[in-house]
Amino acid sequence: MARIRIENVEKDYGALTVLHDCSLEIQNNEFIVLVGPSGSGKTTLLRLIAGLEPISRGDLYFDDTRVNNLDVSDRDIAMVFQNYGLYPHMSVFDNMAFGLRRRGLAKLEINEKVRRTAELMNLQDFLERKPKQLSGGQRQRVALGRAIVRDPEVFLLDEPLSNLDAQLRVQMRSEILRVHRSVDATAVYVTHDQVEAMTMGDRIVVMDNGRIQQVGTPEELYDRPENIFVASFIGTPAMCFLEAKTNGDKLLTDGGDLPLLPDHRERIGEREHVTIGLRPEHLLVGEGRPTVSGVVEVVEMLGAELIVHFTTGSHTLTVRLPRGEKYRPGDQVKFGVTMDQLHFFDRDTGQAL
Ligand code: ADP
View 1: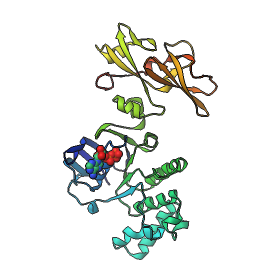
View 2: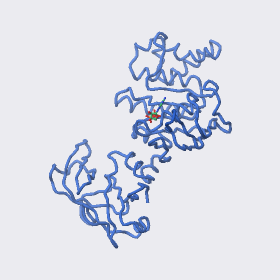
View 3: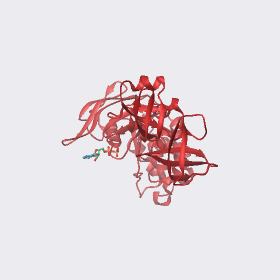
View 4: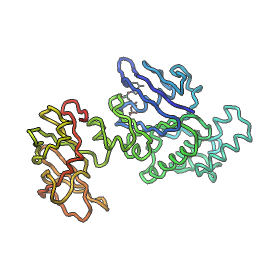
């Protein structure tokens, strides 16, 4: 059992505060992903949970025990890093057995645990090899296996797939989730890749500038981002933004006027200016809807679909279309807007309305 509770945690490096007022509750057995751009504080938060760095302010609990001052070796955690951290002179078996030997487990028990974990990780045929005789994916599996074999309550994973090529990353993602389902442990996973976050996380913690921006399931973050940062960070192609002036019953934009629905009016309130958020799938070809118009800038052919970027005034909007559609840079275009799907943000604070 391990529930992790982070309450108003802050971290200073000298005079610089790199984590501000972070609060988060992670449920037992949950797979939580910390995601954000480089330097947003993900690794620092992970290191505080691990006990590798002291917490400057705030509290950290494992279940109901405050662990701020608990030594890293006394926390029941296992860590997996991007650079594997394997012992090069030891075989796969010995790498995996190392921690168990240090804990003084009997030889038979170590044998049994390592072999069971090797099977789980598909490493049973490589136990005698040294790390340099393995591919990158196999090395990462050994690193994961070495963490799993210890049977910890908490796994902390810091960009574990960054060194792998794209295809292997996709394969390892599902492997990590499969393994997580088969062990009884809480996992905290750091990545800068929002696709990885969306495909792996039970819940995702979006970070920026040392602050937690939003915590939610992938669907919640995609459908109801709480601010412009989360809206633009989650989703590929990204959400686009269009400034609008409100005028009675209309939204006046560079791409044309759009009707202001009663629900929009309620959300926008008295504001005269508002930022509209439009996901690519909220623009459609065809008649019968209010439209935004502009000029095609870039067309990306992705096989099954076409991503078209077009400019309207100072804004670039993106639309996702079936591949049969024909567009060329320079074309004048007009797309229908699914008005009931619009996101609105306060122009000054970036908060969702
Ligand atoms: P991320 O994992 O999201 O890329 P980090 O947690 O590594 O971000 O870093 C967050 C911020 O803290 C960055 O601005 C980084 O420069 C700073 N930082 C991290 N470690 C140290 C350190 N040991 N000393 C000083 N500043 C640090």
